[in-house]
Image 1 (cartoon, rainbow, N blue to C red):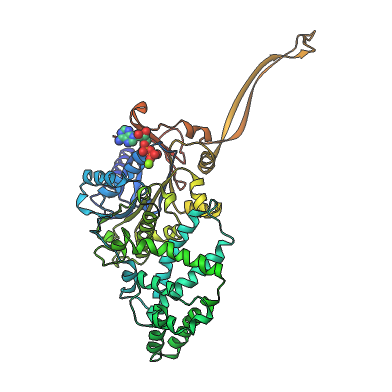
Image 2: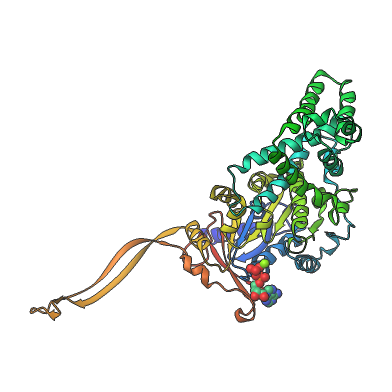
Length: 507
Ligand SMILES: Nc1ncnc2c1ncn2[C@@H]1O[C@H](COP(=O)(O)OP(=O)(O)O)[C@@H](O)[C@H]1O
Ligand SMILES: [Mg+2]
């Protein structure tokens, strides 16, 4: 009787668990909500999405049509909002198809060159009601983030070191460029910042030149800010003096080289944003904001790097950083049984868009419903942009679920190490005849035997990743990927394994 009772109890418990884990009993966006079922009681849940995903694989290995499509369908069907960065032209069409098939087409917001959707991020930042004093810092952070990404992509090593001097010098310029109009009570905009830089004094002599004083926007705003701040508190006045010092003492005395390098850096950042096609999208009004994703919108930045080059990167980076900032400012619902709608930050060919901020972002985004999905070929593609292995490790450490498609090179060694090793009993046999100077020994002694030894062996050898199915007709439209999910053990076979081999159907 007790056996039957126990079995029944186990069964009831199982049913109960099934119901709890099934969509019906769970509150909306509960972390245990199953997004994709992988069989044997395993799958991909909202909690897994929240701890971040990265996908690796050679070009054409099936990253996009395999794991990416598989996860995207799960995220879309579950009602996630999100931001999609675009490196390639076909991404917009692909997401339109994915959204249509998951009945999410109405939630798409396509930000493209047509300018129907516009986002003036400086105004957005300046108009936040909860803002209290950190305005300059926040606006400058957006500019620094974009400028940093542009600068690092230009050097093969993504280098640090003496870049720091230029980064700091540009940061200092940006800070004073944002502060000056704010002290004058003016709305900060990129065209205004640009005209301050282009009319700033080039030498101490120029400061006394009446013609410069008459015609310079920089000079006019300094005067205006002087008037405005003279009515303010001593603290405000002291801050203004700092800013005025920059423009009237430091800037004109910078070496010719330093001044031209930081002006060029600023100009590379600002010019695309104040000229076509981005001007209308970023420097006019606002009818779409990152927060729209919190209501379920899926914002596609259809200004692919492949086509729009630098302007495309800047557009994607501006959207990305503002989205990340918005997610981090999100507040959780007060009641315990309510959960934030998850929002994804999606980047295929992510080497075009990664910055050091991403690791920091994903580490805390989890509690704000942020789910990052980054796809790239290999670790080197991140290292080229981020500059060093530590930065790559920090990023990948914060993207817990890892999908490895067919690949070659160093990433395979790394993946093999990540999956770990186990003890294996290795049996070797040998049979032979001992030889002496080519002749059998007189006594004809033989050596033969079976040896058993316990050895550490990788769960998955690096070479195994070279053999995974890459999709296409040759592979019956099947894509293989090895999934590692932050040490989760997958059971089902003979032993629990820290990975699972999943085959995705492309069609
Ligand atoms: N829907 C599909 N059906 C069949 N084959 C496809 C499909 N999508 C892509 N392929 C093919 O599968 C291979 C992998 O494509 P893809 O997923 O784009 O790789 P990756 O994103 O890793 O570069 C390519 O050879 C591609 O032509
Ligand atoms: Mg792809």
